Image 1 (cartoon, rainbow over the protein chains, first blue to last red):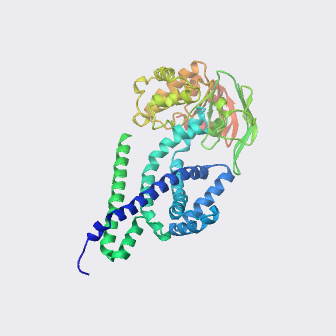
Image 2 (cartoon, rainbow over the protein chains, first blue to last red; image 1 turned 120 degrees about the vertical axis):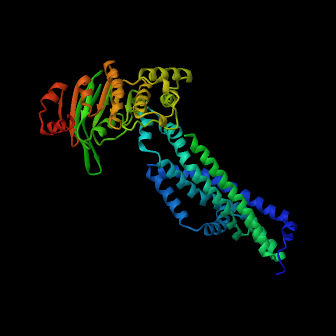
Image 3 (cartoon, one colour; image 1 turned 45 degrees about the vertical axis):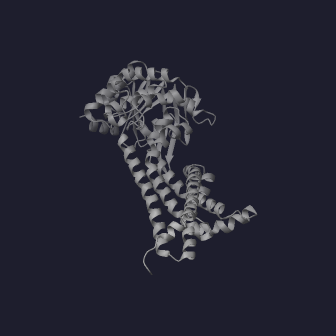
Length: 220
Length: 241
């Protein structure tokens, strides 16, 4: 073995950081796109119209029953067929993540809205508020408070999940580490470094979200 | 003013309202009582469209609730409602609870809405609590804010769904006093309650419901002193002690 040698990290630092940048880009796209699609899906899951409710419900339950890695693979092969041309691994991974994570966001949003007692909606309706006003001023602000911890936790999970894009060859953080490893054969040092970086980022994010949650909670 | 014509409603196979008929004139105060599960709250909620019904019709000022062209939101501006569990919005102060609908539905200016809200809080006796959140108010105070919230839309009709039954005994009176003043000011009121003192003081008519049907009705004296049905007599014996 010959002991640890972290020089390998220093030598390849900028290459590894460009992988980390890709990871961040993918995570931000997955979180924001997933949230937008998730809000729509969550609302559809609450709809009383069967032609809205059932397709959304089937879609959500189907995707939530598949492993993410399968969905990434599947979109990698499916998207070029649908688009008629190859779109590259970043775009295809982005689409897979948005679609997959949206189903998780949708369930958080649905549960958050359903946690608001029916009486609140009746009270809003009884003062002649319409559906949009009822949701916008009465239900969603209250539901938000219940949803935000779960949304933040899910976002941290998404950040970790982006490493699965490794399987389609996307040069995100984990992949760039493994490329360096295959060249330099310093697995222990490289994967320890990756682990420390993932840990620092995720631990910071969840600590911030917990602190923020506590601050929000004490306001009431 | 309000005509309830042969209204029937089912929850699945269970019939909750069975051919209910009733006419309520302007400025009348009608008290609905009866055992739990008798359909009284459901009947109340059909009047502002919070509950749908399968048969019959409700006509308010000539507007039919069964007519698909009826604008429910417009109708609801004329009908205020107060709930058993207050249902104040917990993320808004008392004043914000009251001004929400005037601001958003009537598009009233903020200053005017605030002034009117303060006047209403004055009227229900809790102007000093205006900027508190519901969680920091007592039950009686919350219910009075809820009454003010309903009055803010300047309704012609007020519906009360067991407004005192979630309150501690010492807070019932402060809410009933507000309601009695409202009744005396000429408001048309339909009140689901077991507060027979309130009924005796202001009710023009008392309706007794059981199993989705109105089985007895009368003015206060005739109902209390001489109930015609055994069910009503049993019920009165249980709640008047």
